[in-house]
Length: 162
Length: 162
Image 1 (cartoon, each protein chain N blue to C red):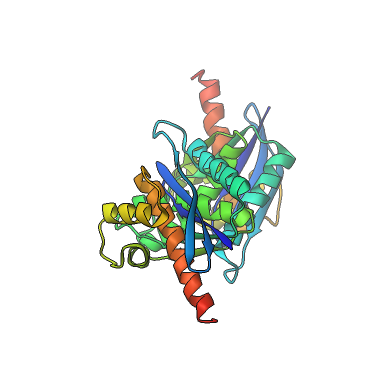
Image 2: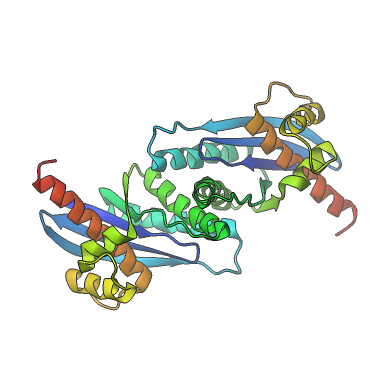
C-alpha cells in the first residue's frame, strides 16, 4: 500500500488530495484547499501554503507526491506568480523528503477521464466517481486527479516490472 | 538599530546579506550564498533554499527584509523557474513573520552606485567599499545591495517623518 499526495498549486487557491493505492485499487483519504486573500501580503500568502501543506503531510504521512507539470502562461507575470506558489509546494514536499513526480495536464486528464482533452468539470465528476466521494471543490478535485494519475502511472510500471 | 536581510534569489545560487542600520549608518554583519546542483531533484534544491535561509534568519534575527523586485524574463520558462526560487525565499521570510520589501533593480543600483544603469561589478565594488568588506561573491553582493537599498529607503522616510 502506498499513500499519494496530489497538489494543484496556486497563489489564490492551492488544492491538495490524498489517496491510498493498493495494487490497482485507489481509495480516497482526504482533500482540501488552502485559500489566501489577494489583500494579504505575498509573504504571508506563500508561508500559509507552506504551513498548511506541512500540516497535511505531517497528518497523513504520504509516501509519494505528484504535481501538474509546468504550465507556462504566455504572460511572464502570470508564470512568475504561478511559479512562486508552485515553488513553495515543491519545496514543502522536498522539506519532508517526499519525491514529487510531474505530470502534464493532458496525461492527468487522460488518466482520469480517458481523454487528454476533457473539460475541467468532467475531470471533477470522474474524480468523485472513481473515489466515491462528492462535493469536492474544483482545486481539490484537480489535486486528487494528479494523485490518481500518479497511482495509475506507478501501478502500470510496477505491474510491468519496470 | 535595525537589522536587515537582503535576498537575491535564484534556483542555482541564492545570495543573502545581513546589515545593521543605525540612523544613517550601515554596518556589515554577514553574507553568504546557497548553492544547488542542477543534477539534484528540484524539490531538494528548493527545500535547501528554505532550510538554509531559515538557518540564516534564526541565527541573525533580522527585523526587516528586502528582495529585488520581480524581474520578468521574456522567456516564460525562465520566469517560472525564477518564480519558484523567489517564492521559496519570500515564503521563508513570511514563515518567520518578516515583512519583505521589494525594490526594482534600478532603485537598488541607484541606491548603491548612484546610477540606475550601473554594471554588476560596479555594484559589487561599491557594496564592498560601503560595508568595508572584501571578497564578496556576486550573488551575496547583490543581496547586500538590496539590504543597503532598504536601509537607505527606510532611513529617508524615517528622517522625513513619513
